[in-house]
Each structure stands twice: as structure tokens, then as C-alpha cells.
Length: 133
Image (cartoon, rainbow, N blue to C red):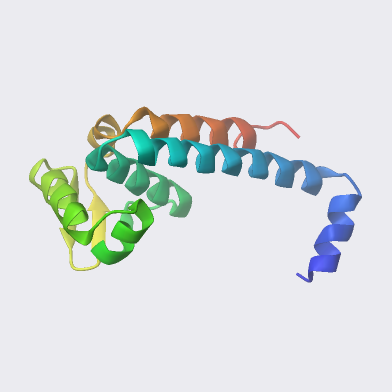
């Protein structure tokens, strides 16, 4: 869609505008929460949060990603992701093979995550998965 068409529809102030503004508010919550999370929480909890949010965004428990990419997303060295993924795999939370992570125990991974996952999920659900217009 050309940007000018999107802007024209947004400027009309209808349902699309409301949806985009709700998405922006939810996204801002995610960005803010991630910044705080990266400063305050341990790597394993952050990795669990990141896996859960990635899974939620694609609607699948199979994620195709490299340890290098996960390390970049979390702002850590690849060795840290290797350790966290190994720990989760030994605990039966995930299965990790070259470039593919499968979430096996979602509730267990949620327990391993910090509260930031639920905070962001609740905000997205409140703003985007409700029947409000």
C-alpha cells in the first residue's frame, strides 16, 4: 500500500486509525519493558521472554533462528544463548537443533520468564485482541 493511501485513511479518523494507535501504544509498552528487562533481568529469563514473544507473534511454537541472531536480539554473546538454550533443553522446555527452536513446555517457559513477558502480552491482548473499536 502506498504511504499516501495509508496516511489518507489514517487521517479520516476511522477504525484503521484507532487500530494503528492501539498497536503503537502496545508496541511502545513492549519497547519500554524490553529496555527495563535488559537492564534488570538475568539472561535465561530474558531469553524465555524473547522466545515466548516471538512464538506469539508468529502463532507457532517452531522458531527458525540462529544462536547468533538470538544473541544480537538479546544483546549478549552467543555463548550466553548457548548456555541458556542448553539449560532449557535439559529441562524439557525447548528442543534446539541447528537453527530451529521448538517450544515443548510453554507453561514451563512462562515460569522461567520474567514478569515482562506477561506485562507485554497483557497489553497487546488488552489493546488488540479485544472487541473494542
